[in-house]
Length: 124
Image 1: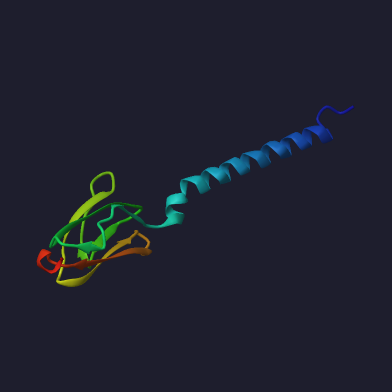
Image 2: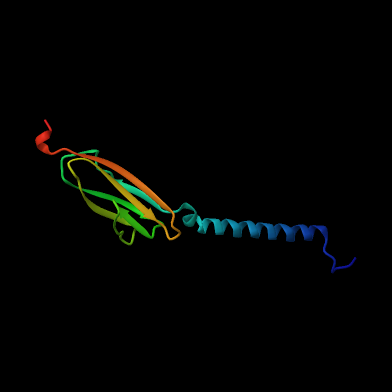
């Protein structure tokens, strides 16, 4: 018997090892690319109620996978952990807060939160 010739079992083992290696490598690449695939993410952590009797409120939350962040088209910034806390001055009546984030590839996501400001003199 020729010792240099591959047996069918040896060929099957080589093919199986290569296939498993490629599958593991592919899974690792997809796992590392998950943030690129997801795009920008915004989550509000402490959402104020719809009806407000205070003129100034704070919008707090976190953003990930972003390169830019805006609150009503005004640039805002996050800390090292991706958290933000921004003041918003409410107009009389109805105000809409729009938080918009963009990643480095130009993909955008928005979160919209409406508020109704009613001064204390009108609440009875």
